[in-house]
Image (tube, rainbow, N blue to C red; front, side, top):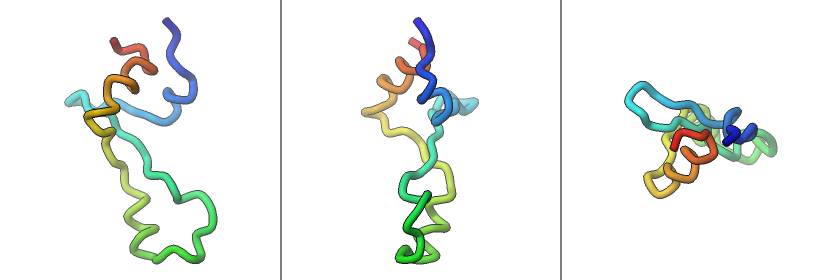
Length: 62
């Protein structure tokens, strides 16, 4: 089974097996967003437990 090319570019696996992701809403229309909000969107988040199996399947980890 092939790895999904879009998922490959968007997710990375941590050493402990969690899946890292970037936040949305940071690409355009930034003038109306507060500085604090934009700063907090720069940090990485983790994929929710409910979505982990779907992402792992796209990354061909199952």
